Amino acid sequence: MTIYHSLAIVIALCFNLLVSTVALAQSADRKQTGPKEADYYPITSFETPLGEVIEASGFQLMPDDSLIVCSRRGDLFRIRDPFAQTVGADQFSVYARGLHEPLSLAWHDGWLYATQRAEVTRMRDEDGDGAADVFETVADGWGVSTDYHEYAFGSKLDADGNLVVTLCLTGSFNSDVPYRGWAMKITPDGQTLPMTSGVRSPGGMGTDSQGRLFYTDNQGPWNGTCGLKLLRQGKFVGHPGGFKWYDDAQSVMGPPPKEPESGSRMHTQADQIPELEMPVVWFPYDKMGKSASGIACDTTGGKFGPFENQLFVADQSKSTVMRVFLEDIQGHVQGACFPFRSGFASGNVGVEMTPQGSLFVGGTNRGWGSVGSQPFAIERVDWSGKLPFEILAMRLQTDGFELEFTQPVDPQTASQLSGYDLQTYTYEYRSQYGSPEVDHTRPTIQSATVSEDRRKVRLVIDGLQRGHVHELVCDQIKNASGQSLLHPEAYYTASYLVK
Figure (cartoon, one colour):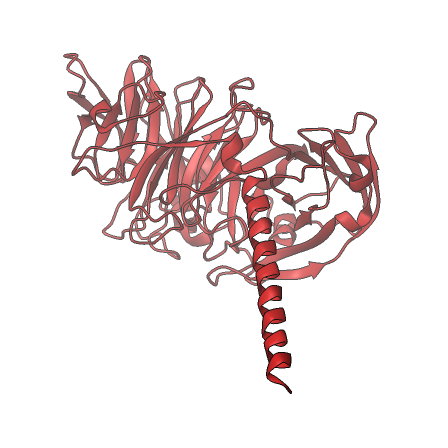
C-alpha cells in the first residue's frame, strides 16, 4: 500500500465521519425544533424564601385568589398572586407552623382544613394579619405509631361537608394501629367512620367531574404496580393487611371479605370476592412512573386545553404528570393513561387545578430521589393556547378500541395497520412486593377505520384480554400537516370488557 493510498483512505474516513456528524446534528436540530411539551404546557417555577424548605404536598386556592401550600415538614405558606408571570420569594408569607406532616388542604365554610398524620385540623385567620390564629381538631379517630410510612392524605370536602382520609399502612405489610390501611369518612359533626379497606400506600386523592372520589396507591405487597383506585363505601381495594379492624367496623362495613389468594390474578379474585374493587387504571411500572401521587381534574371549561373532565395524576419518582381518560364499563369505572408533562424540578406530590386554568405542582425528593434534581419545588403549569396533537380518548368497544384525537388525522397513516403496535399484560396479585408484567399477549389488529371527520379511528381487534393493560403505541400516525403525535403511547386497563 502506497503512502498516497493510505492518505486517500484517511481522507475518506474523515469525510464519512464529517458527514455522519453533520447528519446527527441535523437530526438533533430537527428533534429540538419539533413539537415539545413546553410548547403547549410551559412550567413556571416559583422562587421560594431563602432558608425555608417547602416540600410542597398540598394546595388550596383561597377566596382572595391567594394560594396556601402545605409542606410535609409542618409549615403552611400563603402565596400572594400565584398566577403572576413570575413568582418571587417576597410573595410568600407564613400562614401556620408546627403541624405534623400535613399532606392535604381543603377550604370549607370559612375554614382551612389540613390533614395531618394524626388528625384533621381546621384553622382560620380571625385577626386579619394573614396568619392562622384559631386551630380546632376536627377528627382523630385512627392510630399513629412511630413508623414513617403512616401518611395520611385528605380529600376536599364534598357538598354535604364530608371529608375522606386515606391512611397508609404501618410499613408495607402491616396495620399496627387502628385503621391503618383504610379510608375513613369524617362527617360534619366530627365522626370518623370506616369507609373502604385494602389501602396500602396512598399518594394523593381527588374527585372527577362527577364527584367520584379516587386515590393513588403505590407498588408493593398486593399491588403489582401503582394504580388509580375508586373509593366506595363498604368496598375492599386490594391489601388485606388491615382486616383486623373489621371487628370494630362491622356496624358500618359488615363482615370482612374473603382473604385473597396470593399469586392469583386480581380480576379472577374480584369474581370471587364481591367487595373487591378493581383498579380504575394501572400505571405500568417505570413506563409511566414509580410513585403515583396527587390527583387533579380539569373542570375549567377549556382553559387548560382540550382535556376537559380528564384527570391529571402526578408521579414523585419520575417527576411527571400523567393524564387519565375514564369511562364506565359494566357499572365499573376504568380507562386509559397517557404521558402528559415531564421536566419538573423535583419529585411531584401535590397537584391542584384552579378555575383559572392553572395546574399547581409541588414536589420533594425526600431522600427517595427523583428525576427532578431539586430537593423541593413549587411550580405552575399553564396552557399556551396551542393545540397539541394527542390521543384524546381511548374507548373500549365490544371488538376493539375507538381512538379519538385532538386534531384530524391523516387518513393514509392512520389506516395503516403497521402503524399500530399492541400488546397486553397484567400483574400477579400477591403478597410479595410488586410484580413483573406477566401473561403477555399480542392481539391482532384486523382493521383501522378513520371516521368521516378524521377525528377518530376504529380499531377492530382479535384478542382483547380482561384484567390486562392494553399497551398501544401508534408512532406512525400523522395529522393533516404531517406532524406526529406528541405522545404516541396509551395504556388502557381493561378490568372489565364490553358485553
